[in-house]
Length: 335
Image 1 (cartoon, rainbow, N blue to C red):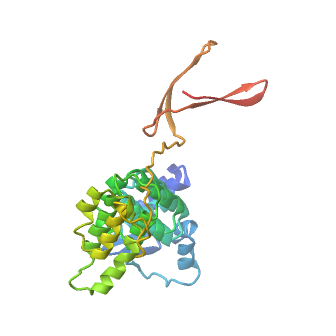
Image 2: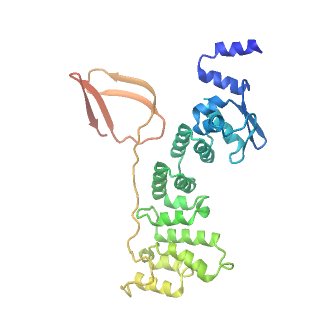
Image 3: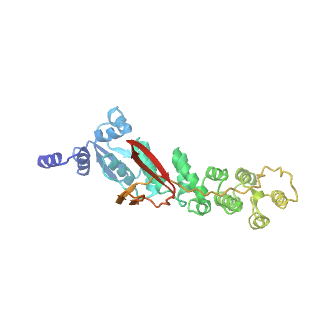
């Protein structure tokens, strides 16, 4: 055994390589985690070097010697990913659910660099199919940058977002936040009313709940719908038969859509007639230039550069940096 140890100790060039080796071979371990049926052996010092939580657990008198540590709130594969990160073993995040679970583990043990890696993954793979899930995730964990990107995604792709698998599982607070947005890409306010109606009917059993209870719960959302921006056709298609409004409320809305009456409805519903403003934002970001295959500047007025980037892009301009008389200058050409 001594020969084997001398071999890895002398041949492993970096500290990270040594850490990876002793973890994978279970050498010199002094603590053990039980995560469901999995048993994971580690090194207290290495864990404590990365996490103040582990430092307190192992070196501040909070843990008994040689007692297995039970982990009940993290899945085995997620906990192992986190441990691999600590030991500088490459990890590969597989999905946004994986990233969210790993983020929870990282936050629990105060692994800030792993938290950032998870958030960066979520920002890169944010789309209309997962944005509702990630919006609620970002609010719960107070991740402001992710939340802002989620709001932008909702604004840009509102119709697709409301058709996604997570739409029926939205919280009331999320729906309320969407209805508070003045800019949304929806063909009509009827789309937003249908969102409220479908969500409400799927979450509230009106036979079990009292009329006062469910109507009171629904009113907080309905008062944010811009009913007066609807056409008479849209009213007939989506509002006339709904159970979420009283007959008087429907009549009040119709009389003002047709402009038979111009006075306030006086029932607490939204009085705005303006439609939601559409959103058309061209996003810009710095791209990682992965491979430059040609750069040529032959003294003529043309400079040629061929390169690959890390993401799909629309090229809207070029910034050229060059030196003239020992001073750095910048020239911007739009194309």
